[in-house]
Amino acid sequence: MRCLILGGGGFIGSHLCEELLVEGLSVRIFERPNVQISVPRRLVERVEWQEGDFTNPVDVETAIAGCDVIFHLISTTLPKTSNDNPVYDIQTNLVPTVQLLELLRGRPGRKVIFVSSGGTVYGRPTALPIPETHPTQPLCAYGITKLGCEKYLSLYRELHGVGSVVVRLANPFGERQHPGSPQGAVAVFLHKAMVDETVEIWGDGEVVRDYLYVKDAARALVQAISYQGSHDVFNIGSNRGLSLNAVLREMEELLGRPIRKKYTASRSFDVANNVLDTTRAKSELGWAPVTSFREGLQRTLRWMETAARTPAETLRELLPAGPAHLQLPLVREQVVAPKPPRTQHG
Image (tube, rainbow, N blue to C red; front, side, top):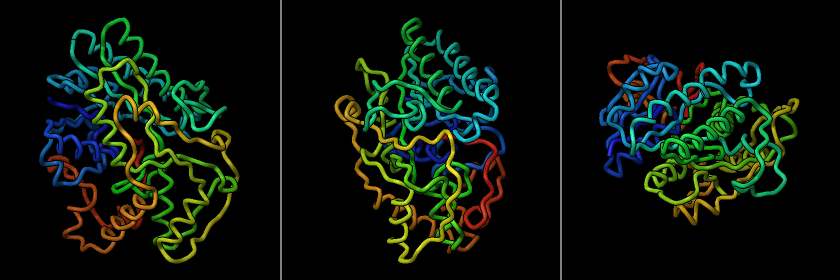
């Protein structure tokens, strides 16, 4: 079986790639040219790489050729920026996803596993934890577009027999998450704490989120490959909610010192609580999280500490490194003073 990971060079994609290789599957990664990637060199050399533009059907058609399972991790926007330009969100996420489904209409037996957003598609919860049957009223264009992609997947499954599974992920964290990314509170906070910078928090810090260790998330995606049941949407989360303040307290305990904090105005699209009900995933996929937040945080901290003290000449084995043909520079600044990417892949 050959698996294609659209946007596979990113944080989640790198761990998914690793899990697929462990299972003995062939992996092809589709990424934009000249993008900073998170896949370690030891994995890069074991996969097939293809560069291209997800909005270009010709590039995508080449990418899907010969692939049995297609993991769709691409997103060109973030929750906090999507409302600034919803048209761009539609043009670069929803439209290309429909183009992908059109290409798959004439290719029976293919399966799409789409990574959606458990943190944004539901909006303000009326019940906690949130089941898949909860109403969907997103407060940001990012969530609306994710939901739109879900609906088109359902349409093409019913009308054209294109197999698909939707995975609504909680907030993933773990090794290889770029601390300079505009998304990912755990990586950003932990990095700032390590270098003794002030952590900025929107609101009073009591916003509750569901933080899922990334290797547990990747395992859920792999288990979705063989699912043949009647459900098509699954929540994948930790079954536990933590406030931002609680996250910072956990970090302070690990570091053994207080973290400098600055509280700023809250954001209108941030709901107060978001914790996912993963009962369906347990019963149907046989999946459940196995890594506690503390253990995942410890692993993330060890990875960051190792990267920060590793000599530059050996750093390539520990930090994001691209395929040789990409000729991407890799320097210590990727940990100490990272620059946020223009777009965010899974």
